[in-house]
Image 1 (cartoon, rainbow, N blue to C red):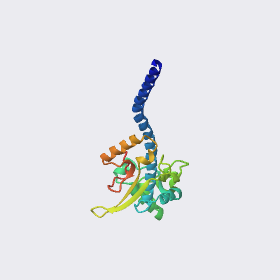
Image 2 (image 1 turned 180 degrees about the vertical axis):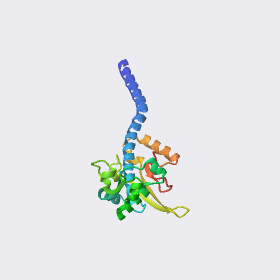
Image 3 (image 1 turned 90 degrees about the vertical axis):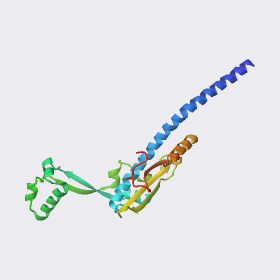
Image 4 (image 1 turned 90 degrees about the horizontal axis):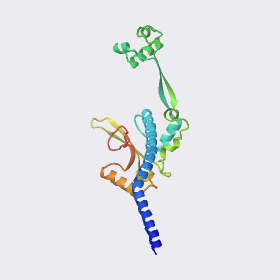
Length: 228
């Protein structure tokens, strides 16, 4: 009887140790896993933001709410890149010369064949040539899969929510807004449910979006991420 009692006591002790261990390590392991998943989602949001910014530059300052359109843009389109040779000296800048003025002088010389003003301003070795390069080669590393842009890492096939809105300021100037987001429940799925619930409750009480996002349809924020 005493032996049975000792065994039961030992098992209770082990259970208590396990409970203490999990109560300490559980939140630590959750934060570790969350940090890894957060970073993967943040990286994808940054990739989307980069594509949207280039898309906007070529489409009258407007974004696209369609991943099909954005992915096709990344795969097939080209963007301008200015190849630079030579820089303006401090003296040239002090004399009021700017890159735009310098190129105007050079372009005029090319059209007229008269290079006196170019030589006078010391612009013989100053060049600015615009070349067109593939979006995917410019923004992303070799082998980048553009089709992955729409998918939330660790989301089991879930896609980001992406929306746009056009508005005007009080002065009448147009503004174009972008918002791309995904909730914690999508990419933290499979981790401790209580920890996720606690995280969502905290963000809700702070009046913050319970997840990760870039941009906002409510307030212009230059497409900042809510982790930045």
